[in-house]
Structures are given as C-alpha cells and as structure tokens.
Image (cartoon, rainbow, N blue to C red; front, side, top):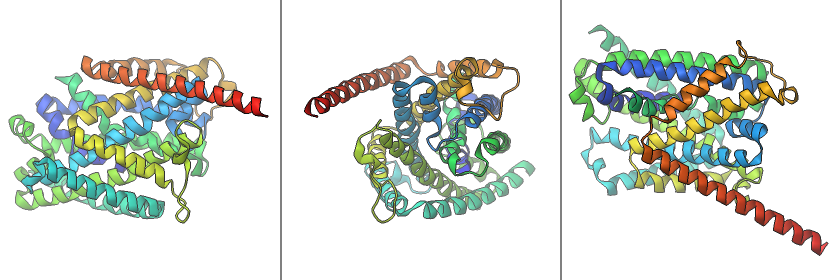
Length: 405
C-alpha cells in the first residue's frame, strides 16, 4: 500500500494543495482521509464476499454483469494505471528540476521518461521478486528520510484541492488484486485495509503540518513542497535528502504500480475483455510481458502529452467512478444476490455507510470542472460503443462457427 500512496501524497501533491488552500490544507487531508476510510470499509465488506485476484473490476462485474466489468477493467488499468504512471514520471522530472533545471525542457523530460520506462519494462518482465525487492528498499529509505524531516520540522478553495488530493489515497485497495494469495484472505483483508488507511492519514497530516511553515506564495511556485520545507528547517542537506527520498519513493510507486496495473490488463485479456495477445506470458519468466509493454507504451504517450496536475485529476475521476461502482455493488449485494456471495465481514448500520459513502463520492466527483467531466463522459461513451461492436462481432463469429459445423 505504501508505494501506491505515500510517494504521491508526500512528495508530489502537497505543493499543489498548499497553493490552493494555504494553512487550511490539513482540512483537505482529513476530509479525504475520512472519505477514503469509508470507501475502504465498503471494500472490506465486498472483499469478504468475493476472493479474487482481479479486485475492483471483478467486484463490479460480479454485481452488474460483463458490460460494467468491461468498463471497470479499462477504467482501472487506463485511468488508475496508465494516467497515474504517466503522472508519476512527470512528478519525478519535476522533483529533479529543483536540482537540474534542464528537466523543465520537454526533450530532456521525454528522454528521462523513456529511460525510466525501459528500465521498468525489463525489470518487471524479469519477475515479481525483483520488483518487490526494490519496493522494500525504497520503503525503508523513504520512511527513514521522512522521519528525520518530521523530527527536525516539528521541533524547530476546498473542492479543487480535494479532487487532486484524493489521488494520494488511491492504492490501498490495489492490494486486493493479489488477495487470493493471502492466507485466510476473506477474514484478514478487511482489517488490514482499515488499519493501513488510518496509518496513512496520520502520516500525511504530520507531514503537512511540518511543511506548512513555508509561505503559501512560495508553495505555489514550488516543484516539490518538501524541498521548500526542508530548506527552511534543515539547510541544504535537507533538500538533498528529500529530493533523493522523493525520487526513490515515487519511482517505487511507479515500479509497483506497473506490476499491479499490468496484471489488471492481463486479467482483462484472460477474461476476454481485452485483445488475446495481452493474455500471453513470457516463455521463460512467466510474466505478462505484452501487457507490461502495452501499458507502458500508452503511459509514455500520455506522459508526453499531459502534465502532472491534469493527469492526476483524470486518474482521480477514473478511480472515483470505480469506487462508485464498488459501493453500488455493496448496496446491491445487501439488497439482492448476497446469498450467492456470503460475507464474513458486514458493516454495521445496514446500508447506511455505503449510502453515505455514495453521496460523498458523488460530491467529490462533481468538484471536477465541467470540461473534465465532459471528456470522461465522451471516453465512457466511446467504451460503450466499442463493447457493443465487440458483442456484435462475437455473435456473428459464433453464428458462422455454428453454420460451418
């Protein structure tokens, strides 16, 4: 969970949030944290009903059928995966800009993206063990540097902020993509998810309190808020530590995110939702190499075309729609069909928590600008057309096959 949340929420988003809200930034963290805790509670119930490696999109498909499963799968790997990965490499370039100004030039940013993605492709194809080794290393280094900054630092418009900050909490639920590999998964997963979210909210709040010593006017122009805060509290060594820790942490997020979201693309192909070639595995390393390569090629294009802020917003909207689907699935199973998927963890208060969560998610969703919602609406309409064509072609091929036999 750490490498899909803390890297974004600590090293990349605080400058944007502080530039919008100033000293009230902490309120956005608390609000987003409480909202995401409610989402995770809904995940806790549905994950106790359905144990699957396909996570979010599988819950939606089980509840509402293959069409919504198709939409959810693409929203997951493209909106939550491709756009997030593209945002992360832009974030790395922005942090390096603090020390190396030439990374503000598009050509050099493009070369950096290419090198990062090539490394990620090769290492992810080689296997999960290598990925997890890097994740563990970056976790230790990142948390150590942040604890140092916290010790030194502590001693010495809301809607727009929330829609960006929301991305900082995305990632906890992705652990459910490997739930089938957990021991006693249905019982353990709900409690682990809730505990992780609480820890992350507390950690974010401490970091934001420490960094808000920098004036809002300075923060608006900062590429990375922690670098600004470090310069106020720890002199040059603090800046260097935070830039190194930031790049390592965000790269850890990038690295593990590619592993998770490429598996979502791979799972969709196995389920017949995506082209068949994406379901192939490497003959030696047994990894979904074509899914990895395809995801990163699309992510590279998006990274070149978009900036960190806009990519994060569209990633947030995509994940909000997925969370809406999951919450609606929880409500549906409460009303009908739950007997087919018995729960080992039920939320107290009946449907109260899912309904309140649904209302909050809709509020968050409509904090987006109208043009952003229109773009997402066109995207969803296009997916609907693609699905209709896909079904038509499948039926036609089936008829031909029957006629031949």
